[in-house]
Image (cartoon, rainbow, N blue to C red; front, side):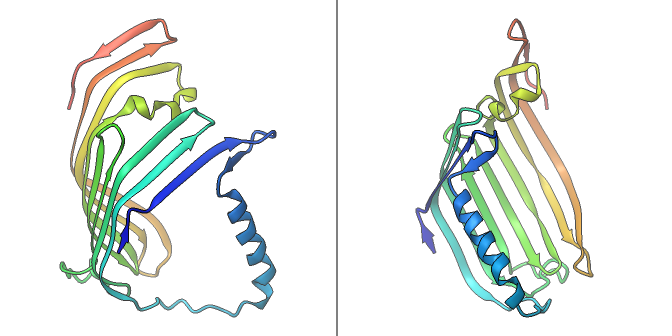
Length: 208
């Protein structure tokens, strides 16, 4: 169990306009050590490491993103994670064993928006399935990440989504794939206000 962990990620640009993060030096050090040790590494087997845990939990985690490139500061003050009856080598989904490898992820942002993912996973082949609920996400708070791609300024908008997902990232031979399916999907977008070229204002009501 991990209680109240705090993570902060900051991004800026150097003189060459390259993105630099507050952990970039750690990545560079690890990459340097890994390259120097490659010649000494022994061949690795493809067998999955056997691991069993009854309960893995993260309680009241905090994540902060300080993006100086887009002048955006986003905080997630309440992050919860739980994984129950975990078995790394069990094909829980393929064998329809519903009581193992169950997970629940709940994330709240500083604007009372929330994401909840619950479902089941297996590691070999890597597969996830479950339900997703995205509630009351204030799109205007995240628009700065992509606003340079559009001649539109999003002044107001709230997004909610729920549905069932099936995600397969490996096939039966453990080769990488990307098979993502969403079913029982429903969404709503409320009070969308757009400013085009910061002159003309458009307002949309609610649709779903």
